[in-house]
Amino acid sequence: MSAEATQTKENSSKSIWGGGRSPYNVSWGKMYMWFFLVSDAFTFSSLLTAYGFMRHRFTEVWPKAQEVFTHFPFVEGHLPLAYVGLMTFILIMSSVTMVLAVDAGHRRNNKAVAVWMFFTIIGGFTFVGSQAWEWYHFIEGTEKGALIMPNGDHYRFSEGVHGAPKDALIAPNHTFVTDAVQIAKIEKEARPVHGANLTENEYGHPLFGDFFFFITGFHGFHVFSGVVINIIIYLNILGGVYTRRGHYEQVEKVGLYWHFVDLVWVFVFTFFYLI
Amino acid sequence: MADNKHEVHGYYTGDIHNQFVEEHYDPKNRSVIWRTFWILLIITLLEVGIAFTGIAQDILIVIFISLTIVKAYFIVAYFMHLKHEAYTLVYSIILPFVLIVYLITLALCEGNYTHLWDHVPFL
Image 1 (tube, rainbow over the protein chains, first blue to last red):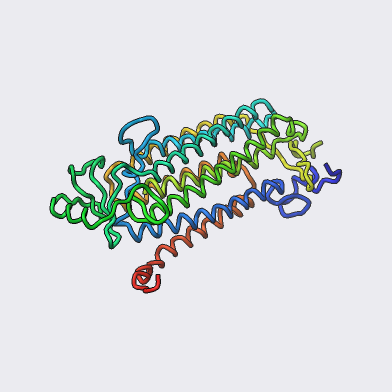
Image 2 (cartoon, each protein chain N blue to C red):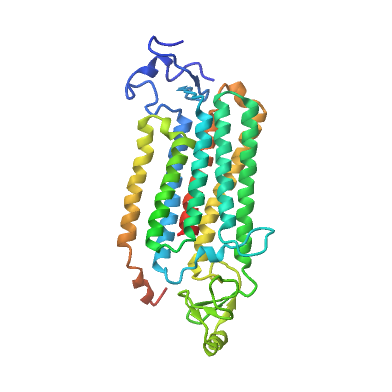
């Protein structure tokens, strides 16, 4: 710890731009974290803008998220967007536990900080695991899959789709094909597709799968790295590093990153699953 | 150690800069945190609920974006503590996003020439 302070307590009541103190009234490390988050937010903004752009361009044939994401672990049946809603709740909850850890740090209560940080890590791991489960089911697809015509048109089966007539096909623009002769013709010409990859998927336009993997993958990677960083800070807390240091600012900085991850998920959830 | 105007409570960061950072601890903080949590939860449930009504797509988009911005405000202001930071920092972070919104609006309004790609022979 250097003996010379760059900012004295006496200076803290002078004018903001008078020198000798941070005009932002925060430490260098925290300011750095804020600006890093701003730059990372730009990255996600550009990804989401590209998504919005393509979704708008292909809006007639774009899959409806509430028809695609209908699974819930260990539960049979059609539960549209339920698991994604639960994931959102888990991430918001872990944000709350993180902010409670920061609050305990302000009160210099090391044990409470450790407890809340532990719950934040659990929440983070649960979210990453849930996202992995979603990916698995997205890639696996349904048993029947879908049909792709030679010109790229995409027909789905109406089984399990609410409001659809039985034994019908769903055309790319979400209308139904019920005529048996037409169905036979389509089934003859088209080839089946199961699940999803980066070139095609059974849910609709190939870009739907591409953007799903890229955006949720980028975000999931951020959550994972956040969990790893949280674990490191948690070990530091257990080892008494911050009690010796006298302040819990590192927990605050890591908390900022974690809240950013939550914030991005709020936007991804809205734009990808709801709109 | 305090000047005669007010008691300054804080810490030295202990890193290479060793800055003095002021700390204001508000005992009402925990109830504010939980209140924010309930607000976020209710708005999320509202959003998921509204998604299943048959409202027109355009109005849905407006509703969702507004609700999301409200959620973003609560997360940034209270969880990330930005509401209580110096206004200089607040503006340094908020103003780029105002400009980004402008950029996104422009991109979406002007970028409708993608149909020209459909007839490019080599792609």
